[in-house]
Structures are given as C-alpha cells and as structure tokens.
Image (cartoon, rainbow, N blue to C red):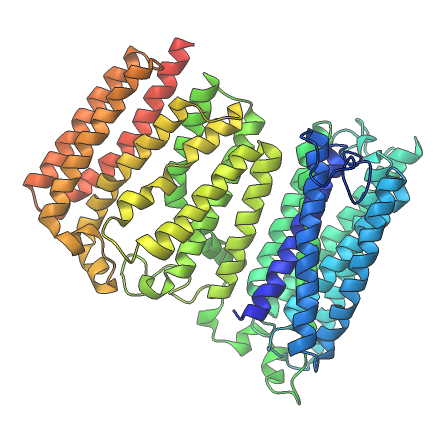
Length: 604
C-alpha cells in the first residue's frame, strides 16, 4: 500500500472514530460539558470533570481528523490533480469541514437544538462518504463496461441513498428522544405496530420500517454483488463486511429497545450505522471505478463468475467468512478468553454482570483477533515456508494481504470502542498496550532478531487478565499483576515445547527460536528452569494472603505434574515428550485459573 493510499485510509478511520466519539458525547449528555467554544470553561485544557473531558475528547478527535482531511486534500492537489475523480471530493471535503466546525460551534452556542444536531451529523456522514469514495477512487483498478456491472452500480447507489435516509431519520429520532418511545422488539410496547398513538411512536416505527426496507435492499445487493465478485475487485472482502455490519446493527438495535436503550448500546448503534454507511459506500464506489476501453473481459463478466474464473477458484460466502476467522487464530484466542473470564470472576469474587462479561470478552476477541491478523500480514513471507502455517489464508492466496490488513485495522478499532464504551477506558487502554506490544515489539522486532523472543514477547499474551480485572474494578491490583506474571512465566516452557516439535520449520524460515539458536539440549534445560520458576511463583502468592488452602493445594498438585512433564522432556529427546508437555501446559493454565476462581468464591 502506497503512502498516499495509507494517508487516505487513516483519514477515513479518523473520521469514523470522530463520529463514534461524537455519539458518545451525545449519549452521555456531555454536549454542554464545554459550554463555550473554542475553549472549554474558558480554558485551553478542560477541567477534570467527566462531562468536560468527554466533550473535549470529541474536539480532540475532530482536530486529528481535520488535520488528516486537509493533508489528504493537499496530497491529492499536489500529486493527483489530473484525476477529476479525486480532485472534486478533495475540494468539497475541506469546505464541508469548515462548515462542520462552524456547525459545531453553533450547536454549543445554541445549546443543542435538534435540527442543528441532525444537520451536524448529516455533514459528518457526507464528509465520511467523500473520504471513502476518494480512498476507493485512488485504486488503479478498472471494470469492464458491461450491463451487469452498470445495473449493480445503480443498485449500489440506491443502497447508499436508502442508508443515508435511514441515518437521517435515526438522527432526528434520537434528537427528539423518540428512541425511548417503543420498548421491545420486534413489537412496540407489547403491540405489533401501534401507529397513531403519539408522534414519537410514529417516528420510531417509521425508523424501524425504513430499516427493514433498507436491510432487504442490502440483501439484494449482497446476492447480486457476490455473483460479480470476480469482475469488481474488492467485493470479495467488502460484501462480508457489509453483511456483518448490518447483522450486528440489527442485533444492537433490538437489544437497545429491549433493555431501555442504555448508553453503551446507543453509542454502538451509531458506530454500527457509521460502519454500514462506510461499507455500502465502498461497494458503490467499487462499482463506479473507471470502465475499461472497449469490452475487454465483457463476455466473461456477462456470463458470471463461473465464466470469469475456473470453478475451482470459486468460494462460497461461508468459505470467505471462515477464511477471515482463520486470520484471527481462534484456537489461540480461546485460551486468552479463559484467562480473561477467570480474572473477571476472581476480581468480582463471583460472577460479574453478564452484560459486562459479554462486552469484555467480545472486545478481547476483537483485540486478539486484530493482533493475530496483523501477525499473519507481517509474517506472510515466512508463513509460506512452514508447513504449519503455509495453509493460512494469506500465504495460500485465499485472502489478499491488503484485505487482511484492513480487516485487522477494523477489528482493532472496534475492540477499542467496544471495551472503552462497554467496560471502561482503562480496560481499553490495557488492551491497546497488549496489541501494540504483540505487533510492534514481538512480531516486528523480537521474533526475527533474538532467541529471547518468546521470553520477552510473552508479556503480550499476559495482558488479558489485566483487561478483565480492569473491566470489573476500574483499576489494576496486586493480584491482577500476579495473574499477568503467571502467564508471562508460563509462556516460555509452553512455547518452547512447541518449538522443539517444529524445529525444522523454524530453521527453514530462519526464525531464531531457542532450539535453532542454542540447540535442543539447551532448550530442554531452559524448559526445566522456567518450569521451576513458574511453579515456585504460583505458590509465592500465599505471601500476599489473597488466596486460600484450596488454591495452594491445586497449584502444588498441578505444578508437580508440570515439573514431571518438564523433567520428561529433559530425559526424552522425542517429539512425543515435547507434545505431552505442550498439551499439558494448556490444561495446566486453565485449571490453575479455575482453582483460583473457586478459591476466591470460597473465601468470599
């Protein structure tokens, strides 16, 4: 990806985040947290009040997005002025940006009148739309000039118009508090469609029925677009994204009206609406790429994807979705979820609020999935050299690197929003730290440069318990740090056992894992050393008097078996011993955390 297109992508993402942050301001009634403009309570730095900081976060995000929008416009004017498809939106977007800034000021000065709020959001979505169009139009790809593509283009732009109408109805409904008029789903206050009861109920029901119509239109787009995925580049990845965002949006909307429209679901509803808007615009923009001269490829396009590509290369929608899921390495994520949930239960001395658990685990899945997707993207060159990883979606050619990168970015941003808005911002910040450490420190630096990569890189996998603890308590205690340290010390013997099993693959890829750099014998000795340190540390927690007898007995018993497997690896230089160590280490960690959960319940 060129620096120019990366700038455009970052601008789109920053504008999306700005809209979601603005939704949080609105949902928390913090719009007047800073009653003046451009200062906040007459100060450049806002006072340390929640409403002021929330409103100021929107202004800060707006500053970043504004800088990127202006930078994109300048870049287009300097390097792409001969392309009207790029120049026109590059001129319009900064003009709308100025208008949006003035509208923001007027919104504050007039104390949030509904019509100004709706116009403010409409301009925001228009700017986001222009940026999405520009990012897609910067692609050098072209399309065959055939009737099927032209028909789909009209269908896609009809979807854009329908989604924008739905967004505006939703914005107005929210501005006059009609979102609370109907309780329950799919009915309204126990009835199917009680039109005529009140203007607010009528408005709410209108929004619902327009949403049903839009969902049907999008479904038609998905079916017809999937048939053209071999003709229109990009549809293979964006159509599943559009389907997923629409489905999640329906679920969030149904959950919101069924639970009293809580703040977090209000914000997630706007985040989902923005994602649907960006996705449907991407589809329409892809369908509007320049046409090739003549009808090159036209016959195959008219014949459908079966004629354009061999039948062996066709993929069902389910296959594409499963390929994207494979990027996230769900097998690894499952153990991270166990440690996160255990930490939450230990922190709460019981079962935390189920909604908080779901939000935290969802955010954790998205964050870990984003990190693993980035790992697949960065390591795609060595993944194709190892039998264990050669069948991953990128090296096998099932997913293009750029599509994987965009998927990882979307997951990462989504995880921050889910954790920050659904749990708290400390949990979100810790998750971001784990993500950045895994991607930048481990994957980009340690993995290929030092045999200590696993020792130092293990900190990334130890972060989930901190996230879970912070989600429940809003802080990080000494026991939470203990859980972090346990996973940190557990990672080397766990992973080195695997490294012994696939030593030749790492050697072929020239990755300096410990068996490659120091030899198998030294690796086995280090497994024993770290196993002794780990087991000793799990018993040392008694010093802080946060655990009881049950945990100590379980830790000693499980640790004894851990040391047995480590000693077996030292004596038996076979893959069978290493495999036994690797498998037991997974069971060990899960049972150790379970023992701590049960122990804390007993103490409580």
